Image 1 (cartoon, one colour):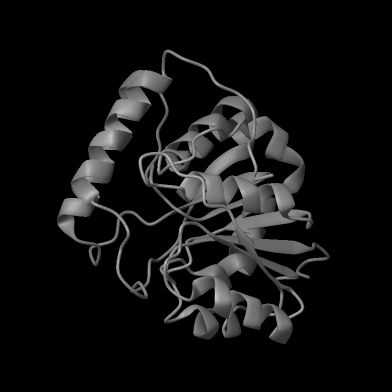
Image 2 (cartoon, rainbow, N blue to C red; image 1 turned 90 degrees about the vertical axis):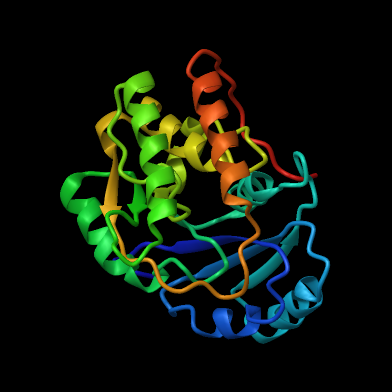
Length: 238
């Protein structure tokens, strides 16, 4: 509990067996609930997760193996979010790149700015490869021209929001596109109660599950298509 608030941490997870136990052991005590959602893991992620459930009462391992073209990042997030019980939900990748220990500062800024949803922006950051920064800048520009919205990190994988706003997010995308969708929908439905807060990215644990060029082109296409369509409703595994 932090600032009198209960807090759930939701993490999508695929083939993170090598460092899952170490990562969970380092999660700060102010997280009341840790929900790790395995998606199509082919290593020992699920088995290790079951062991961790016995060691840490606050840890829960869920499995959602739905995919879109082999990707289930969005499905894992939606399932975790739908099961979270705390008043504050923190979503972050399970590769250790996002500073989940920085939550006290983030919540303080959210309170001062009257935010109910914060997307944690990694940019600008000279330590992140130039090609990745360039790709995100292209997507940010596309969002600006199509939606008239200024977003500094359209692909941030760390978000902090009040559980009460979940119905307003209208999440539908089961693949990587949940990342731009959650920000665009938060801005659309929450207005000035949505904002970005700068964080510093850390060195990832394990190897990336993404093909950056393929994923980037997919985002480019989805952002354009989404501008002229509207889909609503949050999905979760049965």
